[in-house]
Amino acid sequence: MLRAGVGLSAARQPREAAREAASAALSQAGAAQAQAAICFVSSAHAAAYGQIVRLLSEYLGTDTVVGCSARGVLAGGREIERGPALALLAISGDRLGAERLFVPGLKGRSSEAARELAALARPALGKNNLLYVFPDTYNVEPQSFIATLEQELPGVVIIGGGASEDGSLGETAVFCGNAVSSNAVSGLLLVGELEINTGSALGCRLIGRPLRVTGARENILLELDNQPALTVLKQMIGPLAEDLERAAAVVYLATALDADATGLEHGRYLVRNLLGFNERHEAIAVGYRPRPGELVGFALRDAEGAREDLKLTLAGLQAAQKQPPAFGIYVDCVARGSALYSVPDHDSAYISRQFPALPIAGFFSGFEIGPVAAATRLLIYSGVLALVSEKSDAKSNPVG
Image 1 (tube, rainbow, N blue to C red):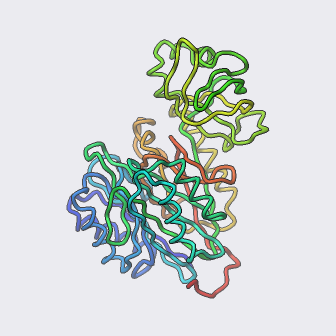
Image 2: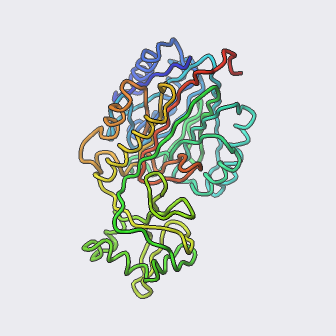
Image 3: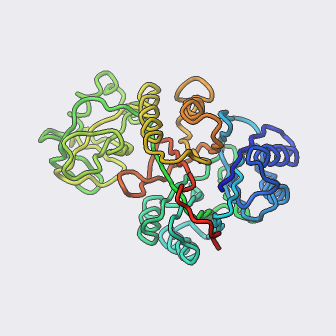
């Protein structure tokens, strides 16, 4: 049987924070100790990251503790975005296998690090596999890291996000066992008779009509529907076109995931940043390489769009569940939270309403990783929720 619990602490003293979070997590799980744990610790505790991880290992009775630094954390329906905070998910199960993973030296070798991480995970793989990964945001090239990891571990559900910080440190950290390091990636592989359901909610809403790319070079959009790309954008965004630099902070390119798409449907498109504009050539630099013929559009980041997409995502996850989930992890972009909604605990409140009393922990991330349309993707401005259940037909043999 899968057992899980979460703990959340805003205590300033590291020992008190670790004890409070561990006690709450074990109590909710109904267990004397944990088999594995995932923790997220805010920047206010940066000087004590190592101490906190060691204390959690001691209190939980396991050295299989992974996680990362965070600008903010969430657990138990609450979100703490400022000050000292620790969120913890403790997991155990008699048919569960758990393996912690760690690869140092991430900078300039994202693909190689992904291959090394996959090599560590491969011997422990089972029938159903869930891999949580937490790379150092400042030292990873996420596109190549994610693409390589998916190629090396086909069929493995991969969830995670880039470690974050509040801007006061200039570096992020990842945790694995007793190791605390920047320029690294940590991971936790869960193996067993698991049902894993994932959903990702975008922080944007579509504006205007879908468009076909009719001219592109590398990451430069030249034409949309046979018109200059920048001309089309200005028509779409109206008054925002008077300040393109400001527009680039809230307007994004939406890209269809299906080559034959005729529209941009929920869960079937991604968003990418607008990186710059060339007024003379009426071109737009974007955060990926568009292909002539593909369907794109523009999206505006706002609270209303984010809220509606979250509600759709949660409803889809609820409908997909065959068994009640035992626990979940939520990875939420740092650009969401109260900065987007102007109220605290927004996403956590909606998740708790859909899945009452479910142990869910998470953090505000530098970028998000999750499955979309049957492939692991780099996500931005997103909230990624992964729910884990035990399959009803699971055999009684324990996982080695």
